[in-house]
Structure formats: C-alpha cells, structure tokens
Length: 486
Ligand SMILES: Cc1cc2nc3c(=O)[nH]c(=O)nc-3n(C[C@H](O)[C@H](O)[C@H](O)COP(=O)(O)OP(=O)(O)OC[C@H]3O[C@@H](n4cnc5c(N)ncnc54)[C@H](O)[C@@H]3O)c2cc1C
Image (tube, rainbow, N blue to C red; front, side):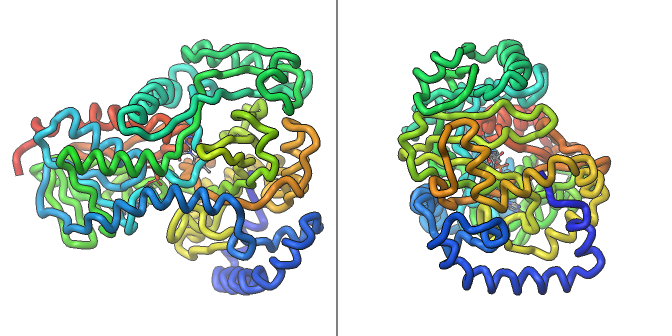
C-alpha cells in the first residue's frame, strides 16, 4: 500500500535533492512515453516512466465531460464573498454542497454561502472517484460509516431522481476466488445483514449468470449498489443551492476560521465574513484549516493516489466486480467498475502521493508539492504507518507501477485479462487521515467547538454518504437561528 520506509526517509535528508530528482524524472517521462505506447509489455522499469499526459486515454474524454458539468458553475456566477451571512460552508466538494443544501432545506430563509478555493466546484475527490453508490456492506456495524452510508445511499438515489442526474442500480458482485477467501466472504455477509443491506449469496453458476466472464467459486450479490457521476451530482447540487437562495463563491480560499461572539469569523482571500456558524468540508486540506483555526494537528491528511485503467474490452464486465477485501486494509482491492456512459475502469491503486493535488483531481503521477511532501514526512504517524504496512507495501507498489502486475491481479476476477486490455486512465487523490500513532482513521471524523464544525476524515464511501453526512453536520451545529445575531 505504500512506498518503503527508506523512500519516506530519504527526502528528509535532503528535500531539495528530492525535488530536483523528481523534476528531472518528469522531463524524461515525456521522452520515454512514445516507446511505452508502442510496446505495452515493457518490463517494470519502463512502465515506471509512463505518464497520463504523454499517453492520453479514452477515459480522459469521460473525465472531461464530467468536469464540463462542474466547471460550468464557475463562469456563470463570479461574485464576491459577503461581509456577513448566517452560515459559511468551506469547500465546494460534494459534502460542502450537500451541507449548504441541507441547511437551506432546514432554514429556507437563512443566508448560506459556500466558499470554494478553486475556480470551479468539485475539482478534487468529488469528481475523481469510482462513481459507485455503495450499499453499506463493508463497514463496522454501529460505525458512522455504516449508518451514514446506508442512509446516504437511499438519499442519493432520491436526490438524483429529483435533480435529474442519471443513476444506474447495476448491482455488485463481491467474488471469492479461492476457498481461502470464503470466511472473508462470510464475514462480509454477516456485516451486510447487520447493517441492514440486502445481499444474496451465490455459487459459481449463479454468479456467472450475472457476470458471464467472471471467475470465482462464490459471491455476494448486492442489487442496490449502483453508479452515478458524482461530478454531475455536484453540478446539480450547486445549481440547486443557488436556486434556493444560497451562494456558491469560487476562487475564494479560506485561510482561517476564528470563533467570535456572534459565531465565527472566516478569513479568506477576499477579506473576511462574519457568520453565525461555519461547517468546514475542505477534503484534502481539512487538517490544515483545522490547525490554522486552533484545532488539534492530530489526525493529519496523508494523500493516497488512486489511479485507474480503462478496460479496452468493456463488454467483459456488466456491472461492478469486487474482490473479497483484505480486512487489514482500508481500501477495497483491485475492482472493476462500469461507469455512467458505459466505459469500464479497473482500479484504483493506493499509493502515497507527494502532492494533495495542486490543481485538480489526481494530477500527474509524479507531481510533487514540496509543502505537501514535507507535511507527510514531518508527521510521526507517517513512519509508524509505513512500518505497520511494510509487508503489503511491495505488492501495492508493484500494482501501481506495473500494468502487467495489475492485469494479473485483475485477472483473478475476470480470467484472461492481460496488460494489453488495460489503458491508463484518470486518477484521484484520497484524503486519508492518519493519526499520530500511525493508525489509518477508518470512520468519518469531526472536530470543532462553539459554532464551528470541522469534518476531519471523509474517505470512501463519503460521496455516497454525503447527504447523510450533511444532515449529521447540521445536527451537530444546531439551528442557525439559535446563534447570537451578528
Ligand atoms: C480514487 C477515489 C475513489 C473513490 N470512490 C468512491 C466511490 O466510488 N464512492 C464513494 O462514495 N466515494 C468514493 N470516494 C470518496 C469520495 O470521492 C470522497 O470521500 C468525497 O468526494 C469527499 O468529498 P469532499 O467534499 O469532502 O472532498 P473534496 O471533493 O476533495 O472537496 C473539498 C473541497 O474543498 C476545497 N477546499 C480545500 N481547502 C479549501 C480552502 N482553504 N478554502 C476553500 N475551499 C477549500 C477543495 O478545493 C475542494 O473543492 C473515492 C475517492 C477517491 C479519491
């Protein structure tokens, strides 16, 4: 799942050297890419040098279509941040937009403002993900993730119907490929039932009826798992917030949130806004904003890059095909996802990234942000985490760097897949909160006091759960009316 400990330690010795080496590597990437395109079975070392930029993929088109929806929010309504309002929501990802809508539904006459630092909404995780509406199978019964995912999935289908965003409940198979995986499948079955999720146990013949090209000896079928383009959901949410009288203000980076007698003062790129309450949903920047506002530095966000391949033979996969996940890992393993629009992606990988996504989404594979890198390297939890996962690291590294290794892993689920079936596609960067003790925080996490709520950890399935998370944040803040007037 991560690079080895020496990799993490080396740049500490000389960060400028590391940055220089990365820049030199980026230049040589372009020269080597044409060779890689012509010979997809190049050995491991050469795969290392491939970039998305040099080898544009079919999925870029799908990504651009999705981003087309979200970028339209920017140019339509450039506007200035107000000096005061009832509620400020920081972050125009799916959760921030859902929070703004929820607040307006609860108190339609309140003034609600979303402040987003990018020039358009949802340019990061919310438009660079698998697009799955998770049913709630995997999560620890009783956890926030379990409850909010189940509630959020139902709410997401309802919202999409209301806002006319297409969804497809295409169903998902979680497949055991060997007898050794059957106990894990059984545990998932029990969890699903405990979480109130509809699943069905299938044998080999039954799973082949649903996915004729899938391998495996048994499966769980979740008919309520579906797909959606979350970028399109964000665009629709932003429109809806504005239609209800809220304001989505892009290009306005929030620098600090201070408690004030009337609620909170938000210091941002255009000055400041006084408000009765603030809900901070800043994704990959959530730890920085929390810290700048006086909250604990623990946990810190460590970015994990998740890259996808596009399947050149999408007819091999009808719906969603997942492995039985390693219960020790927070990620779901190499899976296959049919997307709205019909293409199929395989992925994502899970590798620590040297950037939290400077401009948008996943960025290029070797993007480096010195500040982000330093943030990871200066966090004691990074080293404890690296040590904890040292046995899994080589496997994840091989999958992230070698298309052949990735195809081998994917072929456990759909037999016969090889490297030529996979084409590099988009990537997203996950905001994974890591504790000082090195623990990967699994559940959704919040902090804040007074009239400020900070969302500190919102990994997958937070897009599915976004509407339920929004309701949870608004409950936590309490009615805006109850705050002192400005
Ligand atoms: C590879 C990948 C696959 C995933 N697959 C799924 C899936 O299939 N199903 C699912 O349910 N979930 C999935 N997820 C998780 C899901 O995408 C995220 O949990 C969700 O999008 C988080 O939403 P968000 O609004 O918190 O974050 P983001 O989308 O990252 O939004 C945060 C926003 O805050 C803004 N911001 C940051 N700092 C500031 C500041 N200082 N001032 C103003 N604005 C700021 C950012 O610019 C950004 O727009 C996946 C995630 C990844 C990365």
